Length: 135
Ligand SMILES: [Zn+2]
Ligand SMILES: [Zn+2]
Image (cartoon, rainbow, N blue to C red; front, top):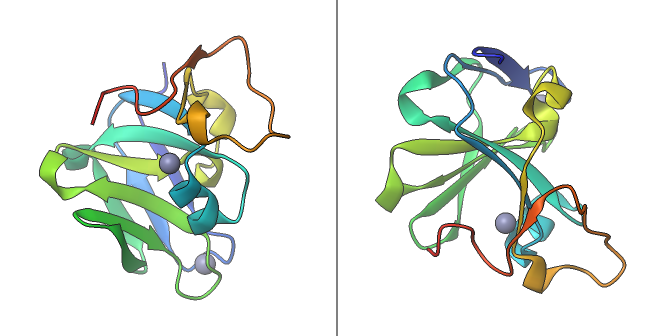
């Protein structure tokens, strides 16, 4: 099991490090993730906040819902993180921005109820109509 990971945006201006193990990996089909990324679904690797740090540059933050902060590179636009401040113990990182995304494969598909009609689900993953944690 990989216990340390780095990643960053397309242009390289922002880099981060997650120094602990991934808590959970999800693939999200919600409309908010779709619009924040411009992609039909978004993979998220969840890490403990205490294990996560930006190590180069500073991303731009955007409150996509009350109490929720998404960050992205202000230069190239790559979406980087998602945080819910009421639940400050974890931060979600876009799986695709990790240097080795295949080492952090998601196991759950969430918000399948908002999925685009032409987007397929993966039968190898757990499926949840909404959030897998009920929040
Ligand atoms: Zn960038
Ligand atoms: Zn989402």
